[in-house]
Amino acid sequence: MDQNRKIIGIYPMTIPASGKSVLTKGISKYYEQNNQVQFYQVSSDEVSRQLIDEYMAKNPGASFDEAFERGRGNYKQTYNKQIQNICDNIRNSNKKTFIIFFDKNHPQNAIKGSQDVLNKNFQGVIHVGVIPKIEKPLGGNLFSISYLISCIQRAIKRKNHETLQGGESKVAAVVISFFKFFSNLNKAQLDFDHIIEIPFTVENAEKEQQFRDQLMPDLKELFRQKSPDDMIKEAAPQLNRVIEFVKQNDLGFPDMKEQETILFQALQKI
Image (tube, rainbow, N blue to C red; front, side):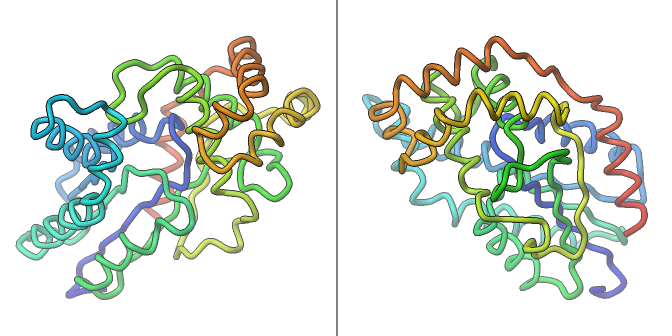
C-alpha cells in the first residue's frame, strides 16, 4: 500500500455495448453515498469525443470519421493526463480508499498503459480485471457468440453514442472487430491481482450451440477480414446475414442489480 492508502484500478475486458457504462453509473451512485471511498471514472469515449469535437471545431468541413481518425493522434496523451490528474487528487485527499474505474474496452494490449500511470504514482496499486461471465466460451476466445450477439444488438439500437456511429453495418463490424481482439486468450493469461466475473449478457449453453451452428460459417469469413471497412467491402453478405440474425434473436439484459452486487461484494473482499 502507498502511505496506508488502498488504491484499486478496475479494468473491464469487454467489447463495445457490453453495458459497462451503465454499470459505472450504478457504482458511482453507490460510492457517492459512501464517505469512506473516493470513486473516479476515466471514460475513453468521453476523451475520444472531446478530441473529435476539437478537431471538427478547427475543421468545420471534416466528417465524423475523419475527425475520429485524426483525433486519435492525441488520444493516449489526453487519456493518460486524465489519469494523472486523478493521481494528483488522490495525493491531496484525506480518504484512505480510492477506486478508479477505467470505462474503456480493454483488449490485453490496452491494459498496461493505464496500469503504468498508476504504478508510476503509487506503490501497491491493486489491479482488478472485470470480465464477462461466460458459460461456454468460444474455442480460442475469452467470450461466447451469445455475448457477441447481445453486444451487436445493443450497439445497433442505441442512438447518439459518443464515438460508435454510422449505419448498422459499420457499427456491427466494429463490434465484431473488437471481439477478434480477444482471440487466443484465456483467463489464466490475464495480468491482474484479482478477476471479477460479471454477467453482461444472458448465457445459455444450449442456445449458444445453436447460435454457433447457424452463425459460425459467416463469422469465420468476417473474422478473416483485417478491419471493419474490409468486412463491409469484402464480406457484406455475411455481415448482413449476421445482422439479420441478431435482430431476430433478442437475448435481453441481465439483472443490473445482480451485476452491482457481485462487483460490490468482490471489492469489499479486496
